[in-house]
Image 1 (tube, helix red, strand yellow):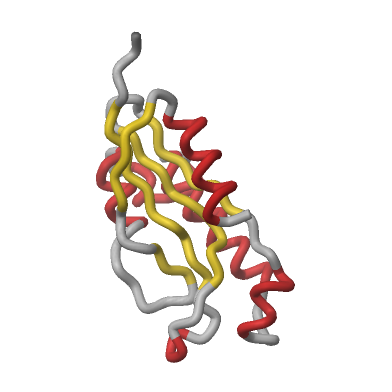
Image 2 (image 1 turned 60 degrees about the horizontal axis):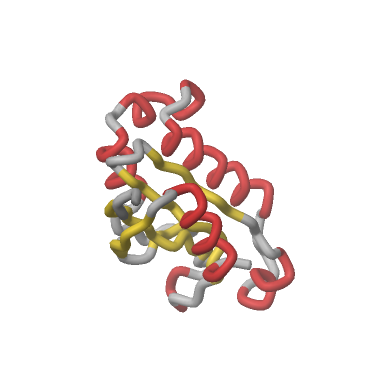
Amino acid sequence: MQDRTLYEYAVVRLVPRVEREEFVNVGVLLYCRKQRYANILFQVDEGRCELLCKDIDFDQIRAHLESMKHVCLGSQEGGALAQLDQTERFRWLTAKRSTLIQCSAVHPGLCLDAEKTHQELFEKLVL
């Protein structure tokens, strides 16, 4: 029987008006050191987001989320940050910010399959 392993995740939030602190969950970052897994899944529900603010540049939001994905995966498109090791990239991405895109606190869990757990969290917390 395969052992469960520790993973960490954070919910990615769109905060269109930072001063109001209202947000819509748009993604989930998940990191599992033992399985060497780190990724972000995201989907922007424009209708839900526009309920909080009518003037959102969705192309800019998607570009920002794509850049987070490049950093998370360590791809060249992620620039210098993507060259950090996997743990440092996850910590940088989940650091507290007062910007349009923010992350929740980091939460731990145990899983057998990080990718499957990531998909389950995404469906539960975002979709």
